[in-house]
Length: 336
Image (cartoon, rainbow, N blue to C red):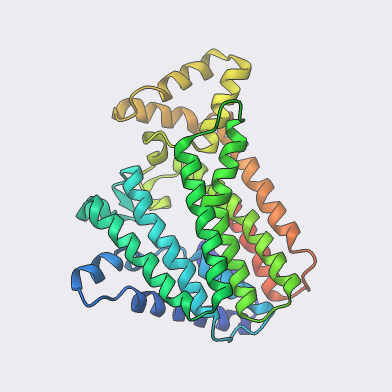
């Protein structure tokens, strides 16, 4: 049993291990190549987060999905580079919107070079991803375009907030299906599609990625409150401080509105205050860490991970399927 990829994923087959390791190494080389520019400063900015590391969750999913066809097919590695470049680009933009200071344990691009450079670097990465996509054919371009539209729509919905009368939790789940689920679904889809897997397998791995993506984001929501900087690679409570709605906060507000518990109402009052104040922020964070809403968010994370696992049921039993199932467990483990 060898540990590869993010979260200590265990691979129990030497051939699968070799394929995954080789694929991820090729993706890493592809990322460095794709982020090179004739302008040294652009190379430095574009490689800032590449060199900071990261889980490479999406490329790993591409590699595992490709095991259901020909994992050595020429489009597999480039498609994994595309999804990771797209993900990296969104991180540059997200950090500007969130005014984040830290990303992956290093200063964010906006903190280091300013918002304009961070936004333009994200655009540069999108452009490089599109260049690679052009060589993968019109179907790949269409798939990525649809996913990118969903991703941006999710971000806009988050910014706009739920319309009058819409359940905030349901709205939020739509947001993260777009912002996170779409690109993780494409990872499963590209891996299967580029490897030449059957259409039914492509559909299964797309649905798996969609559900796993939701669980992945909910785990991040829990981590934003429950973790420290060492675990998450960014400042704890970043979403909290910026007023970004996450599932634990939405569940707290729902409990306060429906139950009227004085402690819940008081915590909501603190949330609605100035969380730029370090003392207030620390108090809210500490109280949320022991609040039932956080545990409910963990349970919801488990539920979506279980749905992802269930989606795999029609696939034949093999080491790749076992690894995909273990990814579900690993995502849940992140949320505690």
